[in-house]
Image (cartoon, rainbow, N blue to C red):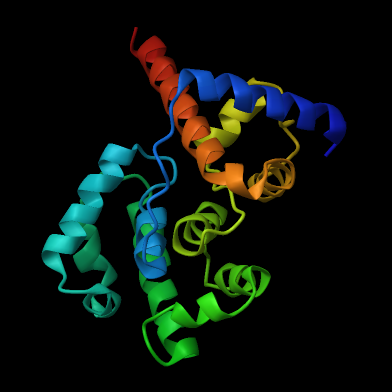
Length: 210
């Protein structure tokens, strides 16, 4: 990315500013598989909407293995066709769970806790059609890894702040942010950036309605 040093300083400045405006709650560790499902339901939607989706999944399915063998159509109907990109999200979940089952011979990511964070992330990046947000979300919440999940809404906010240029795609932006945000800051930065982006997105929707 052009002018990386300048943008890195601006990123740090933005982080300090957002910490004053939004107070992040402590990171709550998740089972990695649960984090995968939650991450797939979370990018570019509100936390409240993702919460409702997870509650519906927990109520309908005994465990994630039952979710794994359910049909995509069954899951889509449960969550509602009005959920943004529902087909893509559900396919990502079922294909990832089945891929993990085939590679690990069990529906578990516990083995990844015994290997390096780099190798664990490589494993996640090789899941079929996995979104960069989901891969980073699992690392952050499932393995306490050095990861900052970004979605299109968060990327748009960083572009508005002139920290990320228009030519930089989501994967490149995520790598840039992770390079300049420390491991121990990963969760708090993710939380305050997500809150700020959601707030800005809400304002934009109100302007459109007006």
